[in-house]
Amino acid sequence: MPTIAGPSSSPHKHIIAPRKRKLRSDSATEVAATAVSTPIKRISPRRCVVSSPGTPIEEVKEESNRVLEKQFDFLDVKSKWNPRDDDQMKAVKEVLHVSKAPSTIVCREDEQRRVLEFVKGCMEQKKAGSLYICGCPGTGKSLSMEKVRQQAQDWAKQEGLPCLETVSVNCTSLTKTTDIFSKILGESETGKKANGSSSPLQQLQALFSQKQQSSNSKMMLIIADEMDYLITRDRGVLHELFMLTTLPFSRCILIGVANAIDLADRFLPKLKSLNCRPLVVTFRAYSMQQILRILQERLVELPYIAFQSKALELCARKVSAASGDMRKALAVCRSALEIIETEVRGSTDHEPQTSVTEDQVVKLDHMVTALAKTFKSPVVDTIQSLPQHQQIIVCSAAKAFRGSKKDRTVAELNKLYLEICKSSMITPAGITEFTNMCTVLNDQGILKLSQGRDEKLKRVSLRVDEADITFALKEIRFFRNCLL
Ligand SMILES: Nc1ncnc2c1ncn2[C@@H]1O[C@H](COP(=O)(O)OP(=O)(O)OP(=O)(O)O)[C@@H](O)[C@H]1O
Ligand SMILES: [Mg+2]
Image (tube, rainbow, N blue to C red; front, side):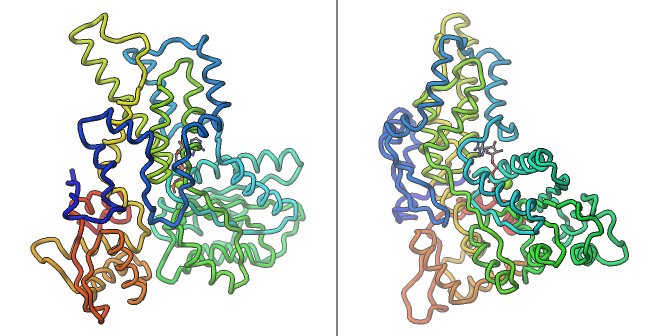
């Protein structure tokens, strides 16, 4: 476990929020009270927006009234939850599992509508097009795209349009970036008919450059999820992929999904210059009300009540203030369930009949403990939410200060940064942008930059514990090898 950087090692207020640190104290109830009444105001370094984490609970109640009413309407018919019952416990854990696709996807209606309208428009006009979806992790992008894919296929059937061919590719599954083209060829009927003598990209290009004999030819919907993994030094693969939609007889509807928020800035200008202008739909981080509503909507499927509403509110408030990542919210709730599970199991050994009261549900103190376990330290949280290039700098710094060296120059740090970029085939930022990012990290309380005229000769040292950096970055796939 990483250590929590104390005030002396990390004096910056964005990082060391005393209230957050209290989460690790033993006084669970005290923390609960603080956390419910005073949301932590941390400026997210990410460019995605966490909408109004500080909304008063009254408003939240109003917002989620419908779901609450639905839930409490069931109160009479809902049986009492028994956390000792393995089947019941399993059922609650299941509805809160990330792999369980919810029967209704709430809070993403607008985004889904916009994407579906775009696909419908392309299909109606038999016109190719591209759309770029970006948003922070756990904001329902993949979930929503799966729904849109089904809706688009159903709609095509309903309208009597030639059925829509769909190809969903998770780019993390590709061995090399150019495999995306063979994957598209291999998974589509249309692609299978292509001429096998040239490269998969050339075959696709040829396919979309020739007039089709039948006017009824199928449109092809390609969903490229986790598109960040296609980023190469020259972004060639990304460009070629999007350019498929601009070929004269293209029937390709491309949806690229990525969570690198700044990818749009980095690759859209080049595409524009090539006359390809994808529509951009941003999935914003979930707000407290949205997280609460999603949790309630998932739990309402159960015939019993397992969580006290105050406990769910606390989870939603904390997760929205930290990242707005729905995966985290689900993980916290599941962890709270495990806590109550251990509690009742423990009591079974000693007092089999009496210790579990009838209204034993997940309460505020269970949630407080679960939150403390999940949000290990504010430093970890902050590092995990930095933009990728800043994370690479932090990673370089962790490597640079491994061992005894106390500080380094900006130029030395830059050298390590360039090495990581090179080995990961990522285009590095120029030295000016690099020093700017170091200044941002200095302001965040992660690095300490000395004063000086020559930017490159400024001394850099770490303000946070190296273990916190390793802990934070090793949870991110990209950095796993860098930190070896
Ligand atoms: N609106 C929602 N309703 C119900 N569950 C949701 C919702 N949004 C997200 N979830 C839950 O959170 C999980 C993560 O969502 P999803 O995989 O769609 O995130 P993502 O935006 O694609 O994240 P990443 O950028 O990391 O790929 C889903 O598996 C689902 O269980
Ligand atoms: Mg996803």
